[in-house]
Structure formats: C-alpha cells, structure tokens
Amino acid sequence: MDVLMPQLGETVAEGKITKWFKSAGEAVKPGDNLFEIETDKVSMEVPSTTTGVLAEIRVPAGAVAPVGAVVGVIADGTGATTSPASTAIESKPLPQSAGRSARRDTPAVAADAHERPRVALDPFFEVRTPQRNYGPARLPGGATVTPLARRLAGEAGIDLSELRGSGPHGRIVARDIPAASPAAPLLAGSLPGPSAAEIKALFEPGSYQEVPLDGMRRTIAARLTQATQTIPHFYLTADADIGRLIALREEANNGAPKDRDGNAAFKLSVNDFIIRALALGLQKVPAANAVWAGDRLLRFARSDIGVAVALEGGLITPVIRHTETKSLSTISAEMRDLVTRARAKKLKPAEYQGGAAAISNLGMHGVREFSAIINPPHATILAVGAARREAIETGNGGIAFASVLSLTLSCDHRVVDGALGAELLATIKRLIESPVTMLV
Image 1 (cartoon, helix red, strand yellow):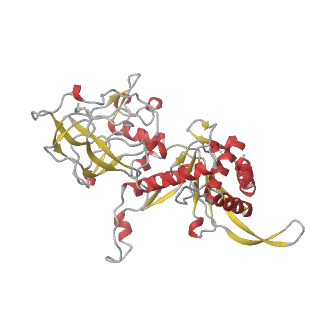
Image 2: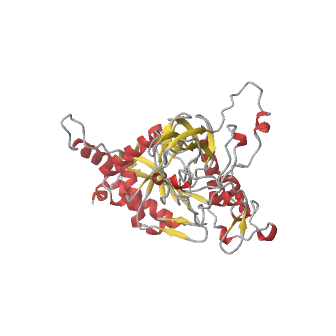
Image 3: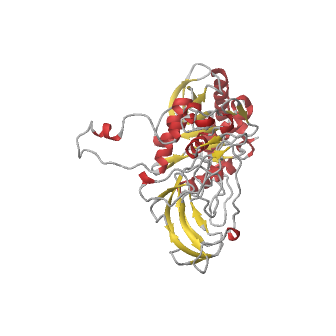
C-alpha cells in the first residue's frame, strides 16, 4: 500500500518530512506514527492506517514532497503490498468543486526540489493503493480537464464547471486557468519580475549570501502579491485615546483571581481589548463583516477575527471564532494558546483559515503607525501602532497629556466603501475609548 503525503489545508501544496519514526523493514500497526511532516504553516505526525511492514521509504527525512506524492510503501508480513481492503481510510471519488478536485496518484518523488512532480490538491488525507492514471479527468456534463489545469483551478478556487476549454474537443487546459483568474499564475509559483540571474548580475560576486526560499516564504510571497494585484486597497487612520483602557486593564489584572501558587487566572493585554473592539465593531456595522467571493459577497453573522503572529521566517494568522461572544479573559487565554501552538507549528488548518477581518499589531516594536496588506479572503485588516504620550486640547480649551495609539484600517474597496470603512473605524475607536462598554 502506498503512503501518500497528506493535505493539511486547501492552500498547502507540499510538505517537508522532518522525521521518520519507523525504519524500512520495521513492523507497523494502525495508530503507529510513521513520519512527521512540516508545511509552511503546521507540523504533525502521520500515523499508519494498516498492519504490515514498512517495506520502503521513498522520501527521506529532510526532503520536500508535493501533496499526494508516494512517500513510502507498506507491505504485509509476507512482503506483498497490503490489499485495498486493509486500508483504514477508504478511497472514494471526491466531488468536483472549487479547490476540491479528484486526484490521481503520483510516482515516487525525487529529492531534488526542481524535479518534484506536480499534483492536484486534495483537501482530505487518503492512503490508497496506486491506480496510475495520469490522463484527463471527465467532469459532470462530459467536459474533460487536464491534471495541471485541475491543480491550478484547485489552488485558485475556480469552479471548473463554469469554464469553457480551449483545448482539443473543448478540453480545459492550463492556459484556461490564468484567463479565468489573474491570481492563478501567482499561486502556481511563477511570480512576476526579473529572474534570479538578472538580479545577481547587478551585484558583485561574493558580496551576498543566497538564502533558499522555504515553503512559508513562497506562500507569503504568492499570497501577498496576489493581494496587492487583485484587491483594491484603501486606508483610513484614526488616533484613539487609550487612557481609560489602560486604567481598566490594570484594575482587571490586579483583581484577577490567583491560585495557591499565586499565579493569576488571566493577564489582559491592550491587544485583547482591540481584538474584542474589532469583533464588536463588525457586529455594530454588519455590512463590513463580509468578504469578496468572485461574483457575490459573503456576509457573516458572527465575528471571526484573525490575529497576525510573527514566526521565524514568516507569519501566520490564527482565527478566534465567535469573538463577539467571548469575554476579554477568554480571548486572552485563547490568543496565548494560539500563539504558542502557531510558533510550534502545531495549528490545525481550521484554526488559521477563514475569518472576515484581521489585526496586525506592531506596537511592541515601537512602530507608530503602518498600513497592512489584506490577507485574502479577508476584507479588512486593522493595523495597530505603539501607544505614545501626546499633548491634546481639553474640552475647556486647556492642554493635557493623553496616551494615544494610531489605528489604520485597510479595506477591500470591492466590499467596503469609504463611508462604510469610516463608520467601522469610528465604531472601533469609540469602543476602545470607552472600554467599559465592551464588558456588557
């Protein structure tokens, strides 16, 4: 039985095997961990689903393989590969839809990254016996699609049933996908711009060190290039007086219950208040709680808020679900857990996918204000700067010092118009300046 590289999210195209727990010739049984994989976002252990012997390791530790590639082979006790009946996860044809296309098995993967075969994405982890079918797939209605076109469509989220093929007999081929989605060439890995050789020619040999791109940096490059080229951004900035917020935070933290060892039950941060303010703001301005979906908008009843987390060599945006229903202490505890597991690459795909809005906070680095790039499919992202002391005019014409921070809201103009974005930002500002209103 072939053991395949599993899919850990609809935008994840490959994984790196960091460790094999079993050696070739070693017996395995269902539940035994076979190997550990690391993608640009997560790491996880992959268990065996059958009883037998690990007859062959085709992708060694340290090598990268695309989703669906054969990384190992399990044989039964006699040395023969296990039968389909012994497979714990049954192989079933998958429905053809955007991002979820049927996959053909691939041959053994080469260790050289430039020789890796390309395969269609599959949102489910399957361990199957090989079928060795590389031909075009037939769609409902009779049209056919080539494997490469099917993969590009899955990565770009394009419904193949809505395309008209330009190949022989109406077959959908790879060139039909970029025509349907400007982002498809980016997601396929062909970023525009000068080649590496052209860039290197501008600098003196030996004056630089070449750093190969890992999966995370490639994904960030592709997604942010896609975002800047396909999302019409505009930016709104406002300053918020956080004097009351700081006072309320200190009072809450000082009054937090403590256990026998003196450890506080919670410790609120300014960012926890901002997360809740954005969540409640989207509830008060529901038209902004939406995303662009090609030919329609998706509007949400709940506030799922993504929070950018810096990792070594990149970043990830885990999502806090139903944020509008959660207390500040719950948001704080959940955020700490997500940050810890994000930095250990232990998040599940469901924990960093989706959401309508996000927050990026660089205040801890002393950044006064900045404009963030929207992370698709989000329609807004709130950039938070550092708090500072400023002299402001009081209501009676006097001068006083206040703690102020800058908030910059990046908006997708296809979803959020100027007036709507201004209303959302003003609502967030009011909540932050009157933090007690976030407690009810």
